[in-house]
Image 1 (cartoon, rainbow, N blue to C red):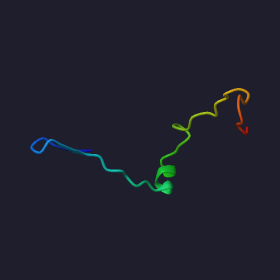
Image 2 (cartoon, one colour):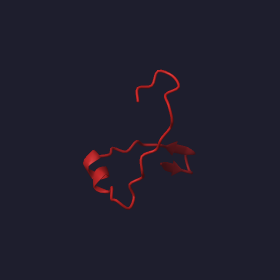
Image 3 (cartoon, rainbow, N blue to C red):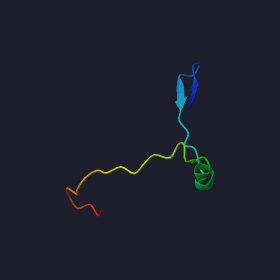
Image 4 (tube, helix red, strand yellow):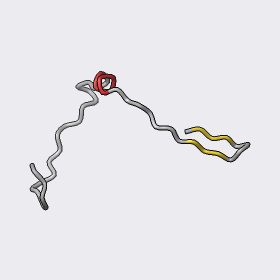
Length: 46
């Protein structure tokens, strides 16, 4: 996010992520366990 107080402008720019770079940061220490959300309540496919 960029803020320019002189012109009172705020610019939000999207970032491009590379999946390989993101997955390279996954380690056994920061990998969360699978979560159980119970039975399907609508039209979900479990």
